Every structure is written in C-alpha cells, then in structure tokens.
Length: 290
Length: 223
Image 1: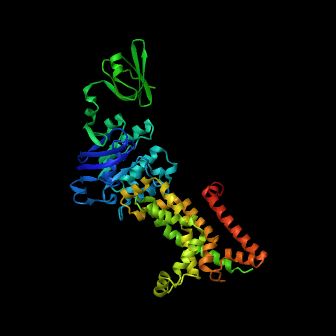
Image 2 (image 1 turned 90 degrees about the horizontal axis):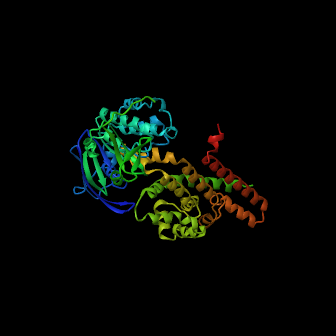
Image 3 (image 1 turned 120 degrees about the horizontal axis):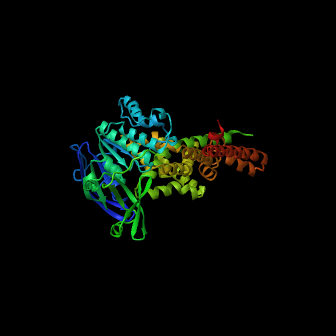
C-alpha cells in the first residue's frame, strides 16, 4: 500500500500553488491521476520517486517510510524501488536498446531478465539500434522495459502515450495492462485521455490546484455506469453549429469526427473542448467491414 | 632555428589541458546543477580571465607566489615549490588563465541535456558519479572536444601571464610567443616569422579539425 501525505509550494505558470494532498493506493492497483496541466500530477509522481522534496508530510510504501519531514527521513531516489517512465522517455542517446536496459541492472543482478524483457516488448530485432533511430512507439516500449529491469513494485507512468498516434496508443494500452498484471505491479499513471483511463485504471484521482477534488472507480468516475448504452464512445467537442432549429455538434472520437444532433437546451450545456460521451441505446448500430 | 620554445609551448599546453580537463568536469557539473546562492560568484570568478588583462592576473600571481610573501614562502618551506620563474608556475598560471575556456563549454553541454536523463539514472539506483561518467559526459562529447581544444589553443597563445610570472628563461619559461617578441626586438624577423608561421598553422589545423568534427563532416564524408 502506498500512503502519500504531501505538502509543497510549487511555482507554477499562474504563480505559486500550494499542493496539499492525501492519496492512498492499494497494492496491485492501477491508479490514474487526472486533471488539468499544472494541477500537480507530475510533481506528485516526482515526490513519490524522490526527485522532488516535499516541504512536509509523509510517504509510506508497504509499511516502510520513504519520507517523513518530522523524523527527518528522506530516502534518495536511488533507494526507492520505483520504475519511472518519463514523458520524454529519457532514453540514453549514447547507448543502444540493449545497453539502455543493461545499464538499469542492479549490481550483481542476473542478466537473463534483459533477454526476457526484450522478447516480451518485441524489441529483439531492435536491440542494437540507437534510440534516435526508433519510432515513438518503439521508444516507449524501450523506456517501459528499462523501467522494469530492476523488478520494481511500483511503476510510474507520466503521460506515457500522449505523444503517440491513436493506433499505437491503443496497442500500447493493451501492453501496459499486460505488464501491470504480469509483473504484479502497483501502477500510477498520469493521463488526460478518458478512454485510456477507463480502459486501464481501477481507480481515478482528479487533481485541481494541488488538491484531490474527486476520486472513484474509473467507470463511476466519468458517469459511464449511469447510461446502459448499447455502444458508447468518449470524445472531444470540436464545433457546435446551428442549422435552422437544430444544433449539430462535431465530436472528435479517436481519429474520426462524428456529428451529433442536439436541441438548443442540450447545445447550451456544451462548449467547444468539452469531453463528452456519445452513446446510443434505442437503435442497433450497423456494423460493416471496411 | 631554436626548437626549444616551441617544444616548451606545446608541453605547457598539453599539461595545462590535461589538468584543466580533470578539474573542470566537477566544477562544470556542480555549476550546471546547483541552485546555491554562491553560484553566480563562482561563475564570475571562473569567467574573470576572459575579460581581465593577462598582466593583471600575472601581476597578482607574481605577488602571491613570491617567496617574499606569506603564500609563496609557505609553498617554498612546506612543499619546496617555487612557482615564480619556473615551469610549475607557468602551469598554475595557465590553468587559472584558461579555466573559462574549459569550464564554460562543459557547463553549457551539461545544461543542454534534458534533466530526465539524470533523473532516470537516479531512479535506477545509480550514483551521481556513475551517471556523470556513463550518461552525461558521453552525451556531450562535442562540448568536451570544444573545451579541450579551446584551452589548448588559448594556452598556446598566452603571452602576458607567462611573461609576468615566468620571465624569459630559455628552456624553462621561454615559450614560443615570448620567443617571437624576443626575436622581433632583436630585429631577427626571419626567426620570428618561422615561430609565428608554425603557431599560426598549428592553431588553424586544430580549430579546423574541431569544426569539422563537431559539424559532422567526418561522419558524412569519412566513410
């Protein structure tokens, strides 16, 4: 179990912000931190991993204290057993894929895990390549494999898929789930993508201005359980357009833009940029090969 | 022509560059990562030789190292080192004089690396020294090369500091730049010209090699 109790004054873009949050993550859970940029999500991950020092508070992981400002305990990042996947992947440019993984080995650790991870991440054919020659999805897989070399109990993923295209993202989401189960990890993810969050996580914490403003199981969190829809997608409103008495709302779902008809009261509720759920229950959708 | 001043110049430049390389890496890595309040002060001190007339630097070193004064006599009595009018003194003076030429490129190189490289290495349990040697330095090779070459070339071109602290002792402190001045004073233009031409060509070739290497010329056309 991870028990975080953190206080920190952060200098954000809009001036100073006081981060003050309590989070409890059960062992083996897949948890997502959700919220606007600048809400303190990445800072929370950095404090958990020891890269940023809280002003005060405690961090306990599985009964061990990693940080306690009252008792003057502050484990170095080197001593915390955390696998961290950075948003920019942070692959070492001077090393090839295999060397990147090997660098992560602990002193005296058995090397066989490197081969296993390379195979599991389907990186075998790429092992001699330098990071600069890899695609975004490949880099992502290397970063993830490298974070797993030391067999951490906690995996931290800071917007790991945000730079990838939709197809790659969906593939890697599956892969993240597999990794989470296979290595029996407690995973903490930062993500903005509602579809991704619902698909991956057990629990969601929403952060705003350094505080947890809402938490819950992923499906309940976004109100998905309220509608018993036959099919449903989440997306973002791109355009609200009036046509005679009706409004046409264009929603971006994945790579596709779909148009939904709404009446005036409905249209007033929405604004461009809103995250929405598009669902249908009265009619069966038509399915067709393309 | 007497080759001794040239040999002495290159010996001085090699020794200085090696010492500078070793001491500049910790200084530069500290400067690039610290948030300490004394950082601007240290940065200023490191950069001073860029703007200060070499004679000023040489003058104070001459005073400091002189056996007549406290520091110089301490060095003389306890360590048996006399830094004025000796090769050792030239090395110390050159190290101080060329410090910014080594520290600044390395510091700039380290600062340009994304901080996540360092952090990723820390989360893998690696110490700062391991991270520096295996990750940071190998990724700033062009900056290291620039630092080495600039310090070398700058030491070759030294005149004021060397003259102040080393004097003009053949075989001991008479480096090429001083020999040129000497020959011109003696109206021996031919000898001055040979020294000058050699210094000119050597520095030209060294700098050209750096720009070709850092510009990727050898990678593109070398194979």
